[in-house]
Length: 253
Ligand SMILES: [Zn+2]
Image 1 (spheres, helix red, strand yellow):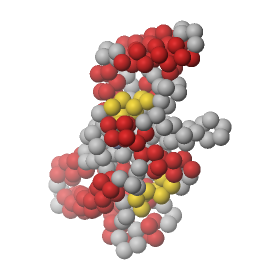
Image 2 (image 1 turned 60 degrees about the horizontal axis):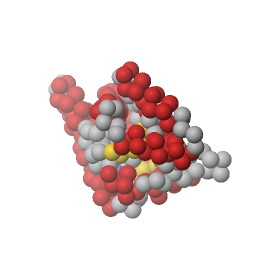
Image 3 (image 1 turned 90 degrees about the vertical axis):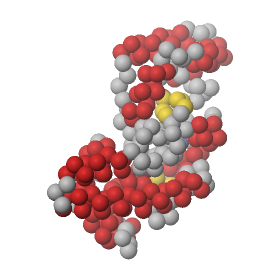
Image 4 (image 1 turned 45 degrees about the horizontal axis):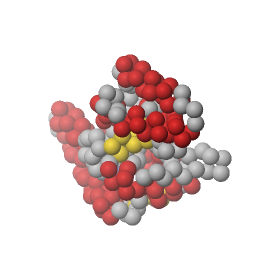
């Protein structure tokens, strides 16, 4: 999971979402609100294209899932499930793009909360998941830094899905090659090639690995985190490289 910037929707879509929410609010009981929300969501054809376009713009890689970062994001997921919060069914701030595996097999209607009722899961469009999760780069597994990070690992199976763990190890190798190639291209004065490397690198699946590399290179314990990988750490700290890659995704680690 990486930090995402919420896209802006067309005004007509925002109005339509507000109308649907008002319609749900008008229902007399909670049961009626849930039923109406379900019914309206089943008929979301008019708003779906704009919602999907907005989510695709925000998504990591090429329209990848906002939770696992690996598979194509196919479903509009309600961060707070509509069965628990019918009034948030048409709330744009409650919509995330998920792959069908994360949506249907992992998250389902799970929405663990703290004792005070606040969510344990991290919404990557509202806060930085890296405050709660640390990727152990050579292993491809996540470590929970907080209860909320641990809840994300468990609910989304971030460490138990072998395709994700092995995929992150491959992504780490690929990302290291990419930054080396970028430096070589720049040293040869091949700016267009360097720009192309940045674009293609960010369009790959599992770009949480690349984000973790930049994030951890700025950590006070970076030398321990990159033990045996000093050349990569030096590249990640190269101001020119850092700015070329991070600026492209609007990140500021
Ligand atoms: Zn997913």
